[in-house]
Length: 180
Length: 147
Image 1 (cartoon, each protein chain N blue to C red):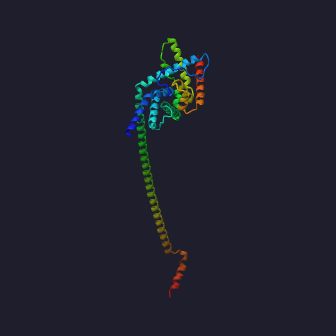
Image 2: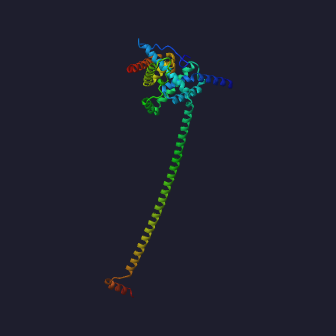
Image 3: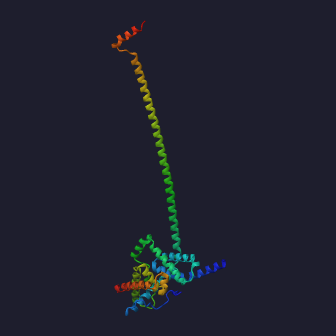
């Protein structure tokens, strides 16, 4: 019995080590708040640990964890007490913009500046998406998940995922097009 | 598991919505966006302050808890004291009212007794004195009574 528990604990530790950075990245991209992303990541793995025994492996561990993370994030924003902060945050100048972190690669300074500007526009557009559209968009274009995986993680049908993704892409495109 | 594990790993952009001409540019922007998020996340994940933040938050939560606890204790104690004080004031007022009621009753009793004494005195005085106009009749009664 103790042996089985040890094996389970070992398995779970391996899952944490493997997927924690990815869960954190998704939550960071969704919330744009490092502390909040860290807290939600911890909550996610705490919840996963509590329910680890009930995980039957019907979906991948990553999809299961992502589902927990999406629900936590949803609960967090649904919380009425956070409405004010959400409004404040969406109106504030974003110092933690993803564009600041764009690797320079082999581009000229001018190309880098342009690329940064475009990434900032995408960030802004993503920020203004509905929560569901944002989740689908980030899972697809940041986490590079398949539509079927997004459907499993969000609990939506593939058709609905496609529809949300299409609207999200249209809005991002419009943001890029309008500022060019 | 098909989610990509390696941050920053390259993969061709999706085929969801294609607009000829602009697609490559849009794909490039999305790729840059992905790379930035990955780089940002990687840097944030390794920041040492991530372990400090929960501690600070815990300290704040603890301080808030203590402050609320103190407010509750002080509030409860002062409410109790205030209630006790109010009760003492009420009982003192009741005592004073009772004393005043007793004194008033005593005064009434005394006044009644004085009035009764006065009336008794007046009756006896009236019964002893005979008006001058009634003197002959009193005389006749006195004569009739003699054998």
